[in-house]
Image (cartoon, rainbow, N blue to C red):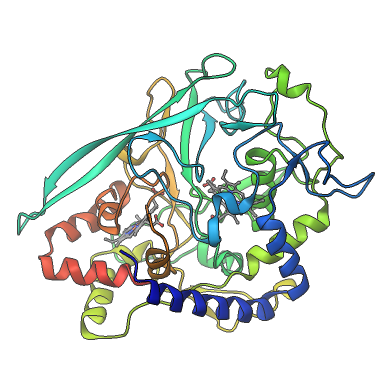
Length: 429
Ligand code: HEC
Ligand code: HEC
């Protein structure tokens, strides 16, 4: 159970930090406008609030979408959460659609996101349910029991017939947004060229994307598909909310979805560049809540274990940041997000699958662990990993295979006291 007093304290602290960050990282007026827009429930095209002529208002939602506001998936800017158990999945867990066909983006009929909502008069693409199986095991030296839950997804009530067998089902939980402004400032060289760790340490790969001959580094999303906060924001608007912008002029209706395609559009683009600017300014301004643990002996022990058993090879202890003109200057030359912002193979049990059950080789961006203490204290239902399958930090670690298998084995071979110290330290970042 969450202690309301401590939650109150950390919320107050977070609010103070947000104000500090607002001053350090951007224009306070833009941030306020951005916050309002982040919480706005957009309305379908043609409904009253839409702006007249060339000035967009907050209309243009859909025709297909998942939820009407950013805050709907990113409540209180913490992360969304995965399912509590079997049944319909929560809105902050979405199903993205990929393809193993290199010439295709998503499913030819359903597009890049499985949209579970639609404007009045139109059918949503369907519903998603999950069923969990439980796997049990024992820790090696002391025999304590552990268990992890394995998800199985089902897409039902499909509006336009079956998905293609080669379509990849990609369940993704909305991650926390605080600190993303600082992640944009992590020096590119530190990500692309992290230096050699000890022999045999996992190195992963940088998420390079090439578009129109230009190579850029992906930093955002569970697989670092998005280059910048602006890139991720405009994608979310187009695919999850059906809102077009200059960067993303098309929403997620495909020509095969004739009913959606024929719906009247709003002004184009539906979201103005100024609106995108303030949203990005707001997201960038969100400061990271501080660790929730005093520096006692057990904490120092937990920290030492985090390094010695290999967690810090990927969840790196420090990242150098480069100040840039339009962000203002960060207060330090280093930040501690506990990520190398590189992609790693965590083994086939963590991979995405196609509709016909073929497993892919999936690479995951090391997620930041900062703010974990705050998230655990302020969220009633905390889940971990890209699809929220893990119910605790311990379960998240037990899913680490592939490049991270050695550090998981080290964790399983530790005694209960060491395990407790490590978990306590991680759970209070
Ligand atoms: C339907 C749920 C949903 C909505 C609505 C949504 N997001 Fe997200 N958001 C996600 C998911 C899921 C991811 C992870 C995407 C991925 O891994 O590809 C994400 C990722 C992000 C990230 C990157 C965070 C990181 O550390 O990687 C940012 C920034 C973001 N969203 C901002 C926004 C903004 C701004 C809006 C409103 C315009 C918005 N989101 C609307 C679900 C949502
Ligand atoms: C090879 C690189 C690597 C190593 C080593 C590694 N991790 Fe991870 N970690 C990841 C990646 C990648 C993910 C995200 C997996 C996913 O998206 O499902 C992750 C996810 C997590 C999460 C869940 C975070 C969240 O927000 O859902 C926690 C907690 C975590 N790791 C802790 C640890 C600890 C503790 C260790 C050491 C025992 C460790 N990791 C070792 C790469 C690594």
